[in-house]
Length: 361
Ligand SMILES: O=C(O)C(=O)C[C@]1(C(=O)O)C=C[C@@H](O)C=C1
Image (cartoon, rainbow, N blue to C red; front, side):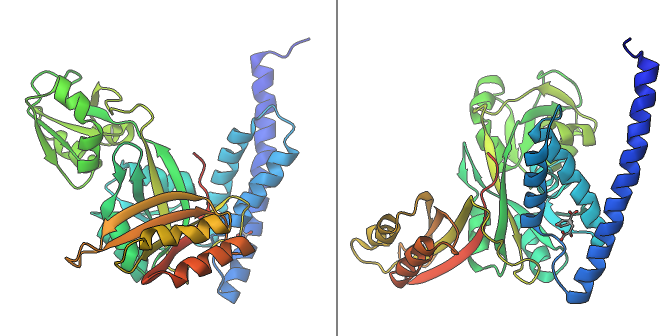
């Protein structure tokens, strides 16, 4: 005979009590790990261990829970255990409700200490000066290209990249009412205004576009004036009590932003090889014909794929450039190490920005 709802709920309650006991046993073990780590001064956050835990469980998973959901649940369990060892402070472009905050929570889980910052410079400063353990900054958007300020800050920063993630970015038009009538000003971060310019040209051609420090800040301001609208996430709308006047107004429905997770090498060294890794570099070459071509030759010779090549002016007034290069692989692989060594010998400036596991698309 099939069980009725009341019986099924009793069974769920019983399983939950077992889970609770097991989770607390796990948490107590994490506490012990924390004591060991404090004694030896080693880092709390170990991304390669967390990846191993999830891989092992996925290999043993008999269902019906699917592997993706399982990973999401264990990321949160480990985030909670990690916070018992030591709360990880994560800096990002605030206020609450930004995509950067969403990226921080997606990467570290929700048991983190939030360090919202007013701009990207402050994120780098917080993580360099010890006010935060990690920083999360956008580096590239699939519609708008690179986030130039983040690249410029990475160039001279003592922070290195230890992880990345990519977030599907849906921008909504948010305001105090749920219609698009009578909007005089649209406020958002310049990147979001650019990502929605086609929609704005078509639907709100008369409205003034006002750039503000973050989308969430635009939403906050829009909550104070019925003729103003912000472009931001649903989360930001909820935070400031706004309606969605028009959903998903970004010009590209697959609009994605890639974020880098940065920290001081003292907080976390470069992660070990995970099997799917990436090295980010910034280089400059002597100003002579063929120099840019030449730096790509070692990559081809040693069979290393380049997944990104960006240039940024060196601000010397001499039309010199820095090149931001991502390659596939890990320096512990001999062909990658050799390619990097040969490449370095051709560069006037060479800096490894980080070696880290490739983020999920
Ligand atoms: O294995 C460790 O080093 C732990 O600290 C435990 C644990 C976990 O909860 O499994 C927590 C934090 C680390 O990032 C990795 C794993």
